[in-house]
Length: 89
Image (cartoon, rainbow, N blue to C red; front, side, top):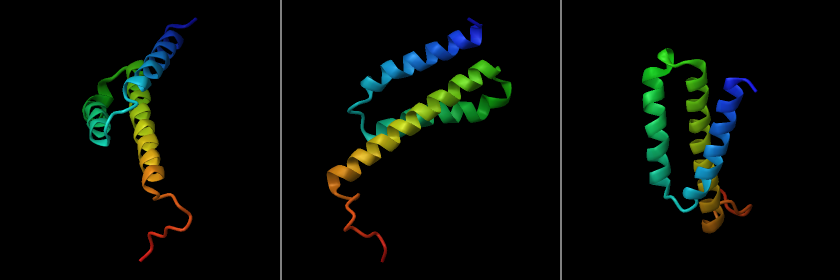
């Protein structure tokens, strides 16, 4: 196994384990966590190795997906995804 493959597996398994931690996280908490990854990434992107860049991108995607899932769940809970509901004015 190549070292970058080992890193990918470690990142993937670490994020999968963390998903459970954030099951009941608020939207604000998820947004804060996403910001904590995005801000340094934007500042340091050019200086990161390809492995670290990929790791940061996977972590950002993880929090984006988590945010999307949370928003989807809220829409279901509040009935905002109802086919009878129109957001048009």
